[in-house]
Image (tube, rainbow, N blue to C red; front, top):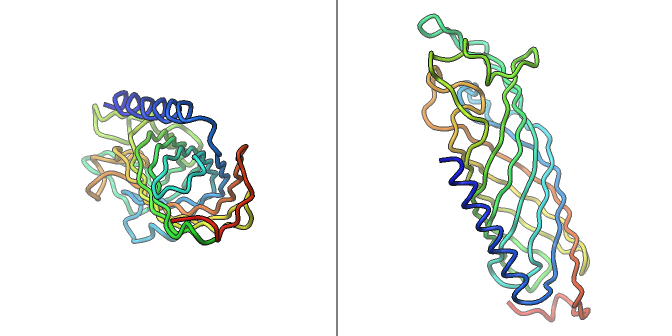
Length: 233
């Protein structure tokens, strides 16, 4: 199942690349962002899902199009750390009460930008991608290999599909530079970002809430120097 998701993403990326080549040289926009990630899952039983955000980085590549909807590639990495000492043993098996999970992601998104004729651009985006993760215990050991924390036969991989939904805004500082702020809700197809699933107390897969502050640089070989006010919606 995970291989199918990765293959689908690869086809989307190839299609994006071929589209850009077939329509001539297009301006591109590169974004670099600082990320704060907060996890929600079986170790956030006390309602503390948004209490702590952990740092990471995000990179964005997209056509610098003035159209309403434009394709975008995102990649990034980060981590989250959480603990719940109140999780008790189930049938003699003690789930981990602490986790330090490192992750990375690669996404294809469609981004809808509004108010494109002025310097302030609110936007929405939705996408699909794959999400790689590795949970560690408090001693730095990989929990993926620690079968004693899960039911017999309960195993999982370290890559899942993910579906980011984002909203945010960009502010154009000049014809070449923009800054942006974004909130992303990232659902995944895995319930093991914290190494806990069958012995957990919450239904559903794990997810992340992510805040991103970015700076964007536009590379346009065909730039004519038009002002923002001259653009059309």
